[in-house]
Image (tube, rainbow, N blue to C red; front, side):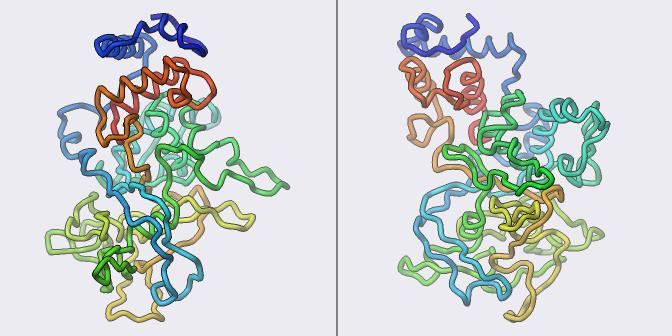
Length: 409
């Protein structure tokens, strides 16, 4: 195949790819895959090796996402809010999906392996990654990535700015090019704080993001809002992220009927994701109680370099039962705050109602979506410009292949 650059008109694209009919579209995809091999881009599937025990232990894509419905729900009322936080929280006007589980060490290691060459290229003075990239669970050097004192399927942690790069990478179909990590959902060039100047990083994900760090409202709604709490379609907020107003007791392992991933390491905490399958929010999210504090998109309004997080961590073992409004309760609705971005936290991914590769938006990813992408490319339609750089070229094909083969990652 030719090296495609700036295919701006229909005839040029047709000449390059020769695609009109269904059979020709199939040929086109085969040629694209061959092109990917020629240029050295691996088309990744979830996990590192198909058929391995690790891959089998992974949550399957169809079980990964919860659809958060009931658009236009209200904010939490004063009596539903934590006693020490005075904010509007929980109202979301649109349908979205949120991952049922936190990003795991195995998933983050795949990202770390892809990003490490660029990380060290831009930091020639380092031989080992700093903690905002590696988190507490990994050791990342120029030659190796090691998981230390943790399990592949436990929740990962990373600094906020690397969570942003992670969703940029997902947005671009896991393309292993530097631009795929630094642009797309967040423009990372806005992140550095220059001495003597106001901090002005990008504070919200870009329009058209395919994956993003959830907003504080999205996270709180998915965790605490129940569209039918009071029956007859009348919604409300629960105090705790298991659809009840009863605190979740920490320190009890799953084998003994535990309900919360928080407790003493001597008892095995933290456990892997989905170790407490009977604890879930009304929308079907797991591990909202314990595991890792989780990053949200909102940043602080002050000049300090901070971002927001929400939820509770595995070492948070307060237990507010019977419920007392005056007791500081880390596991109660809306716990939120700021933290230096280099301190590692966990991550849960948000996405739209449809898979990013579902071009036909029929709820399935199949040949018809390949055909739609090809048609957009032929017509010079901006929907084929998946890199969003104003041109259609091989980078857009790379992104499409990544999204198509990593359906909802």
